[in-house]
Image: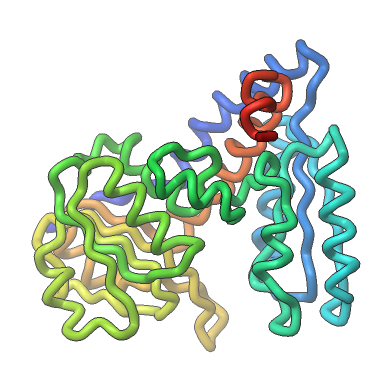
Length: 292
């Protein structure tokens, strides 16, 4: 068996065509979606993500601005900037690029972002809405994964799914989204004993552990759908996922590549959430509910 590639880049391009129409519709009402990105320090992976985001915004017509701080910046400076962006009517989405320097309180900074502009979906109000089954903004990476599954017409309802990783950015919201679609979900982590016992029974495996080559083909159920969220920089400078692609692609029915898979969808979902935020900004019923 040779797995069929799930081409995240191609799916993202299809979505961008729809995004352009939504941006055009907003322009007819005098609104241009605006996204502000805050980058602290000089993390090279973060730099790549922000550059990719900037190009994507330009492609679909979203206004994009960057705010940069040195790694030695003061926490109150970042919070003051976020508060000013919260009040800025031309900014509809705010992205705080993670990870932040360890000395900064990541939780406090993320919770400063207005929930209505939290296009990354990390504000506790938005995470709570996801838990309750009424999502407003969902974290971009897991949202990109379920969008890929939907576009590829992969059956989620009734499936056994394993999510490897328990972060609030990917693992936990990923599990919630799969549960909402009717999957039976197991969440594994670094403390899980005998990981293969779980992955070998899974119809869908989402690997988001941050450990290159963790999932081998021998650990998979034949015909499984494998979604590789991991993006790891190897000593030789190359990028690798959490899945050993060579062996897994001989067992799986569908598989995402790294790069060119989930990463492109993460950016697309950031753009989608920003456009949604702009649409909601002129929908008074939503604004009234969100303010309560």
